[in-house]
Image (cartoon, rainbow, N blue to C red; front, side, top):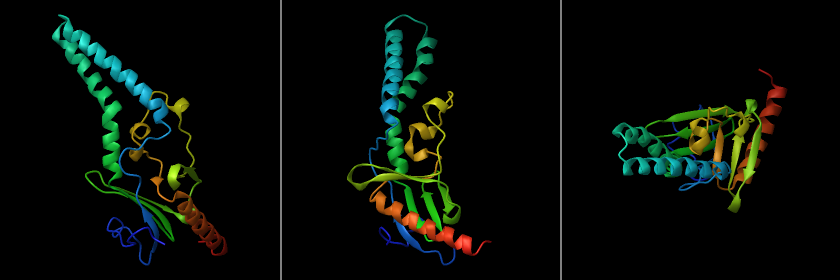
Length: 199
């Protein structure tokens, strides 16, 4: 059963001939904290606090003007890490829609930077469910080798902004356990069909 109108305009141009949506939904709206923020928030406060302290001390002294200008980008980055990234993440999630059809997993984002991902159920990678409160949870498709030990100083935007994570996922959706069950059921059917009628 779909969560809302199965003919959602966000997927109207992406469905294959005869493809049927069995569920669609959206990520949690507003402020969203993830487990990563347990480390990201203290780091951003440390960065931003030091940058603001540096800039304040420079402005209070008779230091050359270029020193004040040199510290300004660090202050702006610090403010973005502390506050701005949450607003950007919320803005992006307001434009994201998820769908499960009998053939594919669909992830679409509208707006100035539209994107679309489709994963075929008969070739679906590892699927994991991370449950949250009130029945919400995140379903991720594919194993992750990333982590704090694998950053090597090259952390991408997806590490700071959940909506920009390059790993396909249904981020903090309602009734996640039921949706996970739907995917498991459809995946099992697709795998059986692939075994009986190989292409």
